[in-house]
Amino acid sequence: MATFVEQSINGLTIGSFYALVALGYSMVYGVMKLINFAHGDLFALGSYLGYTLLIAGSSWVTMHFGLWGGMTIAMLFAFVGVGLAGLLMERVAYRPVYPTGRLPLVVSALGMSIFLENGIMAIWGSRPQAYPAAVVPSTRFSILGLPVTSLQIVILLLSFTLMLVIWFIVEKTTFGAAIRATALDRSTATLMGIDVRVVIFFIFALGPALGGIAGVMNGMYYRAISFNMGWAYGLKAFTATILGGIGNIPGAMIGGILLGLMESLFAGYVSGAWKDVFVFVILIAVLIWRPTGLLGEKTAEKV
Amino acid sequence: MATLLATKNLVVNYGAVQALKGIDIELGEHDIVTVLGANGAGKTTLLKSISRIQTIKSGSIEFKGKDLATVPAFQLAALGVSHVPEGRRIFATLTTEENLNLGAYGVRNLPAGKELQKTKEWIFSLFPILKERRKQLAGTLSGGEQQMLAIGRGLISKPSVLLLDEPSLGLAPIIVQEIFRVIRQIHEEEGVSILLVEQNARKALSVARYGYILELGKVAIEGEACNLKDDERVRAAYLGGSKVSC
Ligand SMILES: Nc1ncnc2c1ncn2[C@@H]1O[C@H](COP(=O)(O)OP(=O)(O)OP(=O)(O)O)[C@@H](O)[C@H]1O
Ligand SMILES: [Mg+2]
Image (cartoon, rainbow over all chains, first blue to last red):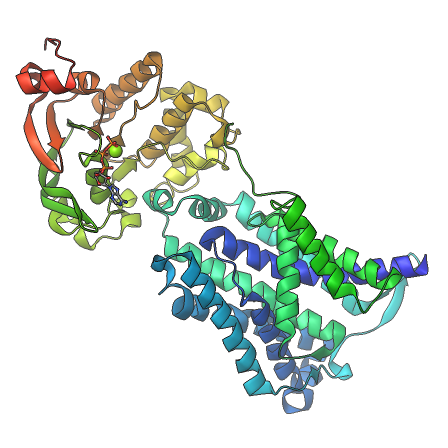
């Protein structure tokens, strides 16, 4: 029972990283019909940006603003930094090849992924780095007998708030309707007076920026970060996206949380060493038996 | 009649294929003009060029004396040109109301408040069924309802020019009646100028003041709608040979 509770809380926590990254995946896919393979590396970039800010000047930020202040600033820094990186990526790697079709776009995305991974290695080195214990909030306590850390609570609260905000923007506002319209039919969206470039800008800034925040959370949670972590996270978030139904915003959130839970419970009860394999077995299974995901792409075609 | 919209020597290429080979058409203020022609004549291409979602090779498009060449497509709705595309193109997974609201997206003086509400009520008075279907996903509407939604979505920006691409396509006669009644009504009561592309030549010529007949990317015949109905060639090719009186 103790294992179950602990692994479930752990699963929810990592599930919320996956969900945030998956959300960005899904948003970009919805509008661009592009699987942005570099998305996981943007998440890694977020981890490193937060790390750099927090260790700078022997943790100057944490000393001046406290643990929570430092964490907030690091997340904002990663949010903005990775958002800008996303915009830049769209400009240099996707916009120029967009008119030539989908395959060049995919190749460009793979290229971006390799570029980012190696860029991170060139700047921060190939050896793993670690968020210093002194910058990570880690008070342990129990809620209703459940063992949790203050960091876990913040991660859960913040992730769910962010997801709710995104869901609200996309599903309930006029701009959100414009995003959905652009995803469905660009030229008709243009006829409505929607500036498609603005929508693409928004998507390519916000999607990666969410991944950036998740990167900082992840760094604080596991402490260790490495230049090639984006690859595994990218694939897991991709799995979460597929699980929930690609292009489906609530699906990405649910897929992420579910995947985190399954992975964590598998690690607790079966094998920690095989948990990544388990995740990819799930990916393959979903692709074979339910390629549209649990929620599927929303359709309203008359049969 | 003052000219509102005019194309001059409009040429459009799709790769090596020339879809429009120098088209001159004119639409006045408070006017209805129809563009007829066989499949593939270039009617849709003409409308897309006017609303700037199709790039043109050469020629010009003038709206209220202003050359549209430098205006980005998404700004046309704000200028007062609204295009109801061929095949309706409603956003299937959005609700009827979301589709309508998006029609006003580009129009700054129709903020989400009272003005939009008023215009929406007007649309609902033209097509009462849309009000009942407000919360329904647009993709689940019937074909006729979808066409009404497409027209309503085009009207909600209160355009001065409405480009309509085959609004009667695939609809039952009674719905076609309904659509044409509304076309007349918005023209007469609101003074909207309409450029109407149609396969239903008989109906189109009965509402239009003037008509152009496109053949292979060129204007083959043009004239007052009344005269076109009497034209031997038009009657043979587009009116099934029968005589239609003015
Ligand atoms: N995107 C495109 N790429 C290549 N050729 C095109 C494209 N769109 C249209 N065409 C060609 O241009 C010509 C004119 O097409 P257009 O759609 O304007 O005709 P239309 O008069 O609207 O026909 P219909 O009555 O069938 O709707 C056709 O020969 C068509 O095949
Ligand atoms: Mg056509």
